[in-house]
Image (cartoon, rainbow, N blue to C red; front, side, top):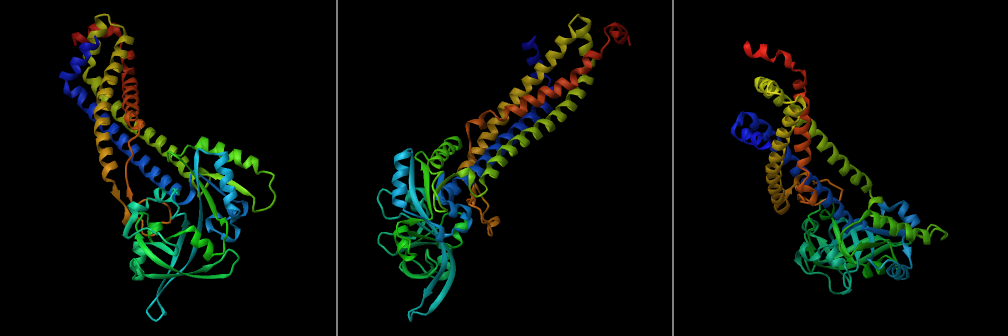
Length: 424
């Protein structure tokens, strides 16, 4: 019977074409939409981890309370001993100190007078140590546009767009005017070693990357840093493991007195990223629900029209002694067969489109001119194991619901009236 029904579906295109096309489109959009949203959120989380939050971050309690303002007067002192403790207690992560700083970049002319100025968002990292992970974490080799990476004390990197506005390039002198850790005025000359472009508007507007040793000297932060970031060695963030690491560290330092005692936060707990994680789960659920409902309604209407056209067929099958339940189940089996075939085709097309977007991406730089979030200008889809089967969820669920609802009419047929219907 099943083989007969499948052959009939293949021969009767009018009976299967509309449901099949509906399932193909629904599965295609589901796979492509899921992969694109996954890629967008993953890019945001990865950029936030690499440039801002790490997989876990250690700060002083006072600094953590005002972390969005990067208050270096509340920075942690004794960073070398803290990193040694972290490496002993949590060797599965790579630990690196960072300091965020703000200030004014002043460009002098040949007479030493100000030629151009601009506000800068600075990031001090370990650039010159051979064992430092920062070159890889920040993708500096890829981001470099002109010049070279800093090799000597007093050299910095500056975003290429910022350098263009200031009219400088590699070899130019730039003066940082800011405040020390103790609130005093700080003035320090640097040489621009190279320019970089990260593809993140929030950074490319006015980023300055300096070696942390130079910034410690300039801002009077000996053995101090605003933050110590921890990264898993495989660069994959695992929320449960990170939460366990943070809980273990915070338990050890729970009884430490003072606002400058260390505290550890996970990536999820910083910069409102918990909302992003939760939003991703909600978007996936809503997307699936919407497609299942819309496709079910379309397939229900299609099933009702098909049932009217097949009114006589059902009557003959019942007259020949076929059980109503069997007729109903065979109708659902037809729908599931169409749903499976449509899901396979839709998923295949959706995966192909997702792979293309994963490779090429979509440039949304024109929409990110005033963005402050850590998101790359080129959004790429991301094909995950879930992408391979998520299209089957609406495809099979919608065809089942559509056929199940439209086929209820079979039970309303009165077998005793079949002969009279056929005579008419």
